Amino acid sequence: MAGPCLRSRRMNVFVTGGAGYIGSVCVEMLLDEGHNVTVYDNLSEGHEDAVDPRALFIHARISDRSNINETVQDAAPDAIIHFAANSLVGESMKNPGKYFRNNVSNSLKVLDAAVEAGVKKFIFSSTAATYGIPEEMPITEETPTAPINPYGESKLAMEKFMRWYHEIHDLEYVALRYFNAAGASERFGEHHRVETHLIPNILQVALGQKDNCQIFGDDYPTPDGTCVRDYIHVLDLASAHILALQEGISGVFNLGNGDGYSVKEVVDACRRITGKGIEAIQQPRRPGDPPRLVADADKARQVLGWEPEHSGLDNIVETAWRWHSAHPNGYAK
Ligand code: UFG
Image 1 (tube, rainbow, N blue to C red):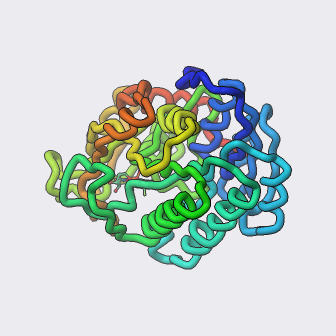
Image 2 (cartoon, rainbow, N blue to C red):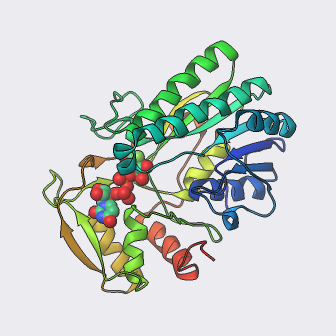
């Protein structure tokens, strides 16, 4: 798999959530580049078959403070990449406590474990949901943060904590604010037990698993009335994590392409690429959806040396379609 090919030494990397969608692809890329990887995941969201067999897999919870401490001590990693989290915006509006417990309180245990084990670098999965409904577009890291759901709030809280840990404990941190992760590698793809995301929902129709997909809202202030998002290939997200391992870099970075596609454009791309009709039903707006989210990712380009290479919408849909066609039930046995 093509990665960023950092000319760095072989590193020991500890990955929480390495059995999840973005985590699994990042672990694969780390291993392809010759790094040692320990995956720590409780499989509540992830899947055992999504863990690259070349990694050491530890099936455990980050909420277990003594276990995460001991495991990080034993692994003695150069860096921790912390993916493990809950990430459903809608669920966070119904059950905020789950998000603050898992994404903040339990993440703090991982952060503390990093400090106690003398780890130098902490890389964190953040989100465009930290911005809420921004007034300016495209969104830079200077755009004010104002989350409109507990999910975004939980990620923003961790960003703030990491800044203090950096200042006080000298822990380097990189918070990567993902826009809309999509696509698949040859081996690993997107399988959520509760699937809310647009592209996998459309592809379920193409696979004949559902009669139609839904378009949430057609009265937004966008060219065709449907929401516009910045879809970024999961391989490009993975390569940003590897670049973030470079010494001496801390801060917050947007990860997106800077191209926005509407829901209708995504449905059309899926029809074209799969060759299937794909019926789409117009529905009311989904609560909490900002009309338009498009990234300015210049900072990641300049500071990390990141360049998205896989992210045209067609390539995203093609790779997702290939993976879902080969794994119609995802990782389910
Ligand atoms: N959508 C539909 N039909 C569907 C699913 C989604 O029309 O069946 C629409 C949504 O309303 C939205 C767009 O497609 O306008 C994209 O929705 P997704 O659920 O795929 O993604 P979101 O933009 O809601 O959320 C993503 C991540 C979140 C992150 C957020 C940042 O999944 O974790 O981007 O803005 F917080």
